[in-house]
Image 1 (cartoon, rainbow, N blue to C red):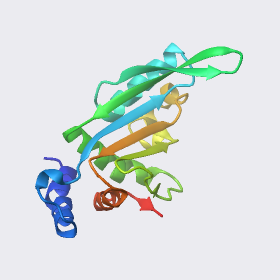
Image 2: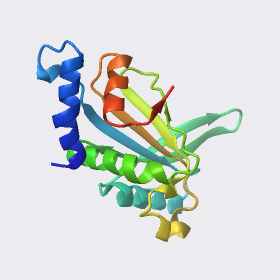
Image 3: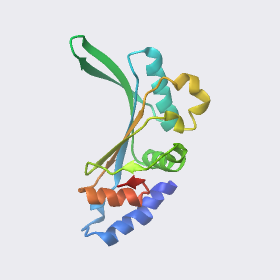
Image 4: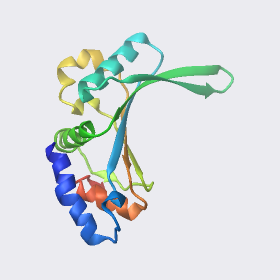
Length: 175
């Protein structure tokens, strides 16, 4: 069991039971999955391959290519390509630990994460993908990549539960 997963099951769940009226342990909120997206500015084969490789290096999981249609005025449709990885279970806790204790402290002028606006999904964007130290030696291959989007899906029913769970998991929410 991962250190961060151990923290969730031994500390966070017990705190949540003491602070709320939960009938059964199956009703406790839990991080369900994390979806990571890495977009490319256009349909260039080199940028698609570099975003696939970057997600593979960051997560250790196999990413999937996602085509998206973007409509423009009078010029027709332009296709943008992105890559996606979904993490569940042990990989989810490994990535959260890496994100909170290795990546976010490396970001210059980090002021915390904004409060969540949804009751069960938290989204944020990292503009500097080189906060992941695995990508620094490979800078020439990944310098054209855009921002790194992250969606964390929690099994919560209200914003208060999500704030409690996020603060218990040591996410850096600022008002």
